[in-house]
Image (cartoon, rainbow, N blue to C red; front, side):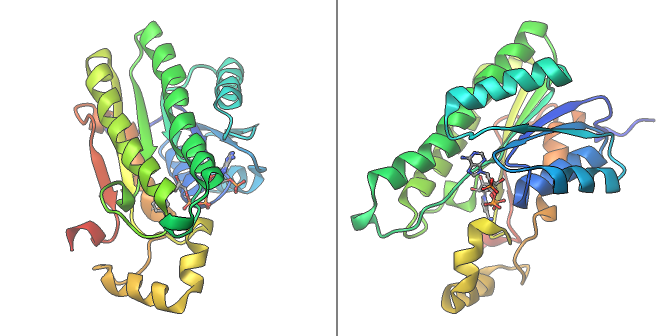
Length: 253
Ligand code: NAP
């Protein structure tokens, strides 16, 4: 009997797959049987090697600066022509800028919103349109944050973008659930990656964060993969508009 979590024969497009959470998700999807198109602005060689090492069925590299939504959609459409239509979209690429709200610059607002929210929406639009035109089952997994439901400090545009991605997840789920497209999000807690380097380098912030995590450790990128496999799989076919925390219990506190 095949597992509801098996992704054999599925094609996934994962943004920001060269490192961190995107890399962890790409490897997990490949390990579950998907062929993974790794998209971003940096070489994907390490991720493609990890996919092979995990016994995955292969992957491909697609490079562009995804902060420009037109370039991002063009990259997605070229990848779909090359690799075949995608069944899974993971909107993972994201940036963070830190400054006190009173000093926050327009550039730090626009740069974060453009990538974290605008590109994610227009990639979802291209993906959803193609899937619904073919009447294919498809799944979108957005990468939200605990700052989708909390305020945080010194990260105004990031918090706005992550609240926004939750709203979009719910809106797209409402519009597309009956069209065979699952739209859900994962809300990672504090994960070791480039995104959190500044926090981990600050002994006071680092200790305060660690002390509040019920699991007693920071998360690893690989901790996020299982949730992505689930939300991309047939096992989650009746899951729509969910925001799944993978946070060591942070939001339960
Ligand atoms: P990361 O290691 O900094 O990864 C960010 C990814 O986005 C990288 O692949 C990066 O590529 C890519 N990216 C950034 N700007 C890009 C651009 N203009 N064009 C194309 N790709 C671009 O951080 P991460 O923690 O894995 O972050 C992944 C996602 O998880 C983000 O959406 C983040 O907000 C979210 N998240 C992270 C945490 C955490 O604790 N780490 C918690 C909650 C949510 P480069 O390597 O080339 O820069």
